[in-house]
Image (spheres, rainbow, N blue to C red):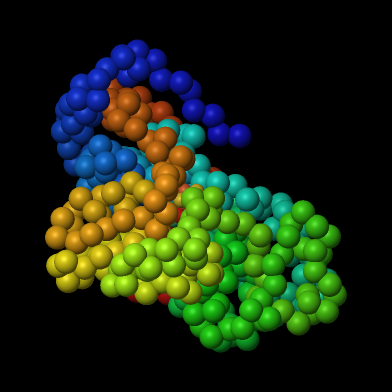
Length: 364
Ligand code: 13P
Ligand code: SF4
């Protein structure tokens, strides 16, 4: 259980302007000793502190190349900070400003449950025929399990390439934790729905018949992102009924019926770049977290950018990183206090690194 101590005064009492000015001063005092990585879903007032902004892949690649800084302050969620710690080159300390910044989807797959499911699959198939692929939105323990079994991590940017690689090896793929990324990716590779099955960890043998387990080419863990479940095909149809020129762009964590209707599908970085490069005057409906949709709208005043869901909300855990926690973290570093260090140790570190490095090798 990860626990974030409550901040106390002055952080609880300062105005946003005061917090921003203290964070700026601490950032300046640290100079080259700190690198701030910011995921695209971060709050507007936090994202401006990022030396780099990006999706999970870009930030993992950047974490693997920072050699100079003593500290990486990760404005994102826990699994991202863990990956940065595992991939770092030097002896940097990775700091997550609020330890409560987890990921609801990552919490849907415990390493022990996945290992139990694996044993059930191995009772039916030779282990050498199976290959585990974990979405980067997973704990380091789960990445370590994958690394130990010869598997690999993927992100929303490289899932297609990585799953294709596994299938081309003739393997049956066990994909977790996001059933939707897994399903959308396999469909984009031309696979039929009949070749994939949903593995429900709450049920014996995933709730599947002996015949399904024997025949399936892909096993999809029953996990999802609650944020991306808030988009529906009906909303897309309603938008198109009002504006027949509107283009729909969705993150692959969205359900299959939304992705099927979208004009473009890809990671947060892909969404940012695609809309930035589009023609002035174009209209976009976006299926991803709301901080990012608002930012894209603000940065593209010559285009109309809306959410697919008119009542869309933020990712609550990404939003745990606020100015108060950022100022607190940076000021702690200035004072030489190490708080909220994310560190993956021992066997987990070694095997998770293997699985992450396999991914990076396949992403160049
Ligand atoms: P990206 O890698 O596309 O940034 O996705 C991360 C994520 O958590 C999406 O919900
Ligand atoms: Fe996790 Fe969903 Fe938030 Fe992404 S948007 S960090 S998958 S809960």
